[in-house]
Image 1: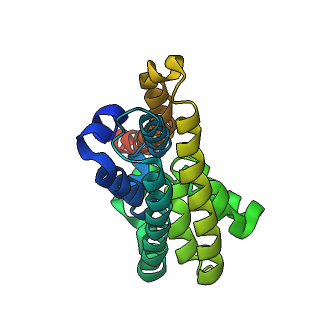
Image 2 (image 1 turned 30 degrees about the vertical axis):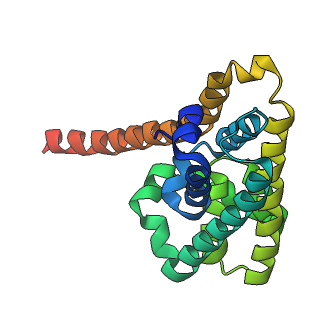
Length: 213
C-alpha cells in the first residue's frame, strides 16, 4: 500500500487506511511527507462512483474526527517534549525554514493559524506541535482545530465528490498526485541542498587553515 499512489492506496487500504493516513499526517511529524490533500480529493471522487470504497457520509463523519485527534496528539508532543522536539531528526529534515514560516503564520494570524494551516502542506503538521510548544490555550487550540478539521476534510472531499463525474479529472488523477507531492518534495529538497552548501562553505575555510599550517 503506497500512500503516494492515492488510487491504489484507497483501493487496498480503504476507509481504515485513509483514516490512519490523515491522523499520522496531522499528529506525527513523520506525516509531513504524506499528500493529504490529494488523498482526500481522490476519496471524494471515489465516493461519487457506483461502487465506492466508502460512503460519502462515512468520509464526512470520520475524517474530521481523526484529523482533530491528530492535532491533539501533535499538541501533546509539543507540550510534553518541549524544545527537544525541534532538535529531532525529523525536524532537521523538515528544515528551519518551514519552522520559521510557521512561526510567521502564528505572528500574523494568531490562533487562526490552526485553521488556516490545514490547507498548507508541511505547515499543517508543524502547527499542532508548535502550538503545544508555545503553550497556546488548549481550549482555543481545540476550537480552531475542530473548525479547521471539518473545513479541510469535508471541504476537499465534497469538492472531489462534486467533480467526480468530470472525466478529465478522473482520468488524469496522476497529475494531481504529482502536484501535491511537489509541495512537499520541493521545500524539503531545497532544505537539504542549502544544508549541504552550508556545510561545504564551513568546511572550505577549515581546509584552507589546515593547508596553511
